[in-house]
Length: 353
Image 1 (cartoon, helix red, strand yellow):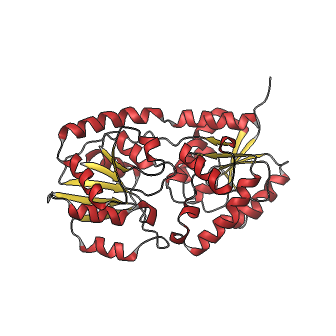
Image 2: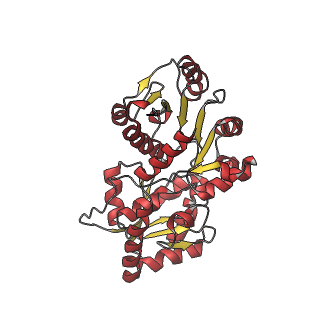
Image 3: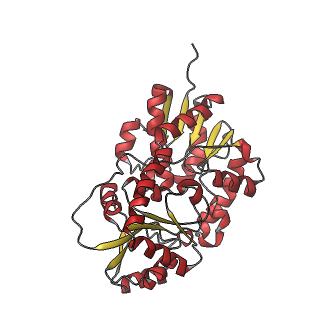
């Protein structure tokens, strides 16, 4: 009987706040733990913030440093002392000088929108990622769109890149509450490619006077448009909620008039699926990976056309039949994605090496 390979998961993502990348890494890790048992282990620098997940995975911490320095220097040294086992990297980066690894690169936003990234972040990624991509034993991404993007940017054969989709976590399901007001919901960090300024301008064009716009997401000081935040603060109909926990997010999705995601660029796009899991009608841009992920289960808008964004939102607000249809199609759409299936796909990639 063949033994499963010994795999180590680079768990630096547990020291970071949760966004789509960290969500993917956490869910895949938890499922791989079930599939591999003691044949997979998880290592991280100190400073873990996702403590419950770390306890569930049995994460080992080591080293004096954190962040990129830990990943690029302490991690490969540790691995070589353990006989150079297979390293699974789920969060875009990996140690450059370690050959026996699988790398998950979610998208190439930093290449497509370099001017929108903080200088330090941009320099780090543009230095590291090309080397990591070229040296990985296997490259993984989350959509066909991202696979083509990565192949184009780094001159790779796209067939050499595997796809493991994102999915929706189990806690996202319909949870009605007594509503006090009608609102449109957007969940996105306030960064350029998320296109929040266009959404705000489109919202201001709406004829409906009894609808607010709720914005959920991280206003990272490195990425945030200060003028945009000022505009949000001046408009009483726009409510910036910042980051919220999943239970609050479920409540917001479940009771929104519709969810709007006018992004210019996504490697996958988990929030529209989360909204659909909570039976919320969805309006998304017709850009990047979103048509691949959402198919015919949403209303599409042109993210570069403010009037079109507003018209598509309004078409949902005023049409109860359309809302009902979108809710039904959304629930059907999310059945295409689940973390168990995605983890099994990752296991097949691992087992072939």
